Image 1 (cartoon, rainbow, N blue to C red):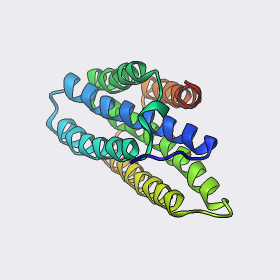
Image 2 (cartoon, rainbow, N blue to C red):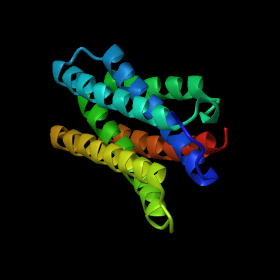
Image 3 (cartoon, rainbow, N blue to C red):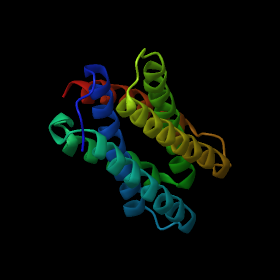
Image 4 (tube, one colour):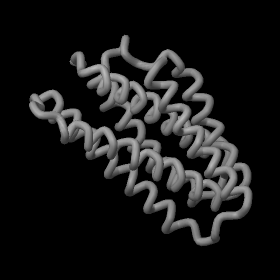
Length: 178
């Protein structure tokens, strides 16, 4: 059963929920757009992990506290997955690197803020553990994508990854509010 958290944490969890939903749809977009077996295997594996993250975040965030922009996060996620998959497999792995690099920092900020909380009750400790586990998984996804991507970023990849990073920042800010 989800409980009430401090406002800052509730907003952060709302953005986490939106982000995990977006991640699920990134992998749906990749799977829709590619026939490359290596990319499909990567996407299927990570879709499973992101779906678990989404379920776990949903278990700690009350339904009424979730972002009201969920259809938008699904659409954006799908586009962020499908577009690079239509261009080529290297772009997929560079995109995942960019997304997960952002998510790593995003989760770390929340973990550090929880660590600075004077009196962490069992609920906050549980949320912290969830965020640590999600962050470790996202770092693993990033590192795996980096290992698979053998070509340096093209001009398209550089521009696209910068756009994805900026878009991620805007999405987090919006999800925290709406």
